[in-house]
Image (cartoon, rainbow, N blue to C red; front, side):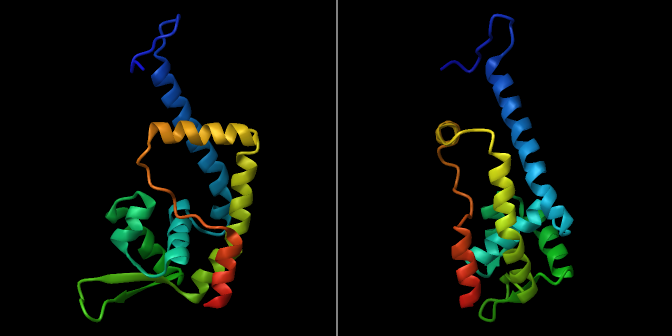
Length: 166
């Protein structure tokens, strides 16, 4: 496939498709994230809570890898979550260079409260396309970025079960 595909009007279709993809993704992300703002969280803060809820205590660099963010960005996010009493930092006893971030009981409780409604907002935002179109969208996105890592997702009932088992 050519990287430069002008249509009959001279528009570069590849660039147009890219712009449409980014604008659509940003619009959907903003729509879904509004529900988090009501609770005083940014999307990055919620994603950090989710990663910690699903994977347990992690070093900030590992959180950054899951979120596809820079270490500096994650430091700010964790600082703010710590101020809110939702996460705590603990220095590794054996190697004091490592600091791990973990959810507090309040962080666990808030995540469990927000997770299902967040998934519902995602489903509503994606409700304009059929199941077959969702499959096609996934195939197209995988073709664009076959090495992209899967996000840290889980069945919401599994997350809630884990929270009651802890």
